[in-house]
Length: 234
Image 1: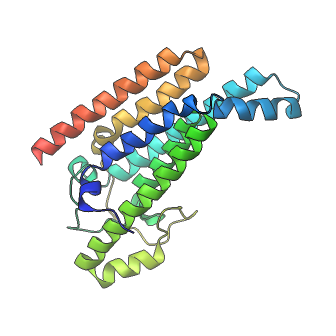
Image 2 (image 1 turned 60 degrees about the vertical axis):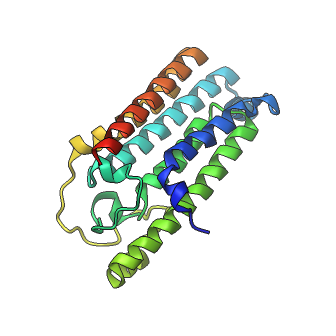
C-alpha cells in the first residue's frame, strides 16, 4: 500500500519518529546490538571484545558516510527544493548518476542510515528501525511511482523495467543523458547527513555517548533549519 499525501508531506517527521521510537527500546532490551555481535565475534576471532566493538562502530560510521555520499551524489542531480519538497515533483525524469543503477538512491541511503544508526541501538531497536525504515521507504516509493507513471507514461515504464527499484545494480542499466552533477547543490541538500556519520565515528573513537548525541542533535537541528528555509522558498 502506497503512502498517503500526509505521509509524503511529513516524511521527515516520520523518519525522525522511527528513530525516536527505536532508540528508547533499551528500556525493554538493555543490550546494545553492536556489543552483542562483538561478544559473539571476539572469542571466535581470538580478539578483545572491546576492540572488535570499536571496529564495528567504525564500520557503521563508514556505512553512514557511504550513505551520505549516495544521497549527496543523488541530490547533485536534483535541486534541494525537489529533494525535500512536500509534494512529488514529476516535471522530469532523472536518469544520470546513481539513478542509472537504482531508481530511488535517496531511499536506499535511508535504509543504510537505519542500519548504521542501528549500531547505537539495542538489539530490538536495531530491528525495529531497519524494518520500519524499509517499509516506510517502500510505501513512499509506491506513491512516487504512481505519480511518475501518471505523468510520464511509457517513458517511465521503460525506465522502471530497466532500473531496480531499491537495491542498486552493480553497473548502469541505462545510458547517460549527459547531465552533469552539481556537487554544490548536493552538498547543500545533504550536509547535515554527513554529521550523522561523524557522530558514530566520534563514539567509536571516544566511546562517549555525550559526543554522539551532541553531534547527532546538531545535525538534526541543521536539517530542520535548512528544510524549513527550503519550504519557505518553495
